[in-house]
Structure formats: structure tokens, C-alpha cells
Length: 193
Image (tube, rainbow, N blue to C red):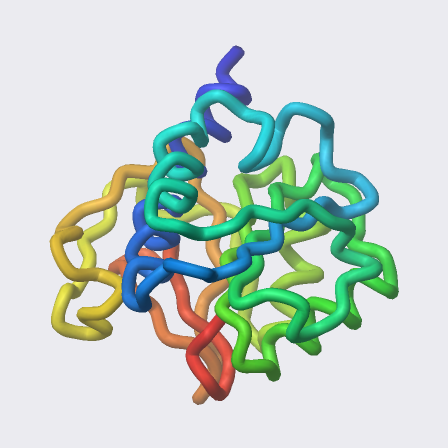
């Protein structure tokens, strides 16, 4: 039961940034692709999980069209934004999925990717390699957000509490941390990931 609560609380915290990310632009006529990886567990995604209903309703209520698809088969520029559902456990992304993630990082498509706590070490390390960050399975549960750092995303969000922290921290010039403990980070030359 604790793992389910951890996923829910951590995901809800990240969803705050996702709502802000997507709300920066007018959502009418947006197509948002919600992509499952080869190991995404059934019922654990943005479309199927009940705890995502507020986020889902916000997107559709703002006029966005939600489409589902496969991460490994996604063609860049097929939609205005992409949400990559939480990977299942400690399983690597496939080579095809890593290629798509890398292409998304270098695109203009807005992307929201979920990571998780220590149980997700393998896939979190894969994500860190794609973005050029450093993965660590521990961190601060209570994090402050600097609303002036990137106000389009962080406006109105002062604190985030994670139930089970994992983080991909910026390394050198790569990435921008939006929270004190690197729980929310922004990546890509176009700051879209």
C-alpha cells in the first residue's frame, strides 16, 4: 500500500508542474499524446488512474485533445505536447524509447516525464543519461520552489512535498532545477522537457 501512496503523492506533486507547464500556452486545439512505454503497468497512467482525474479534466476542459500511444513508436511533432507515463519498476527503457526521449529533448514539443523513488533506479538512470543529469535515489521530501526562477511554470507554487524522493540533478550547464532538492527539473535547449 505504501508504494501506491508514494506513487500517487509524488505524481501529484509533479503534476503541479505539469499543469503549470501546459497552462503557459493556450490549450484550445492542442493535441497532447500520452505515451506508454513497453513496461508501463496497466492502470498506472494519466488516462487510466483515478488520481489523475483533476489533471485530465483540466486538460480536456481547456479544449485539449488527449491521444494515447506508444513511446517507442512516437513520431516527433505528431502532437503539441507529450506526457510519458510512469515506467514500471526497475526496468530499462527500450532502445527505441530512449531514441524517442532523446529526440523529444531536442525538439520544440513540450514534454512531461515521470520518474520515481529508489524502486525506479534503472529507468531513472536511463532518463539521467538522456538529459545529461545525475540520478540520485534520495533527497529532501519537502522542497521549496523558486517562483521567480521560471515563473511560467512555477507561478503560485511555493512548496512541494514528496512522499518518496528520487531526483535527476543538473550537471554542469545541463538542466535547471525548479525546486530546492532537484525534485522538479527542466531540460533541453528549448527548456521543453
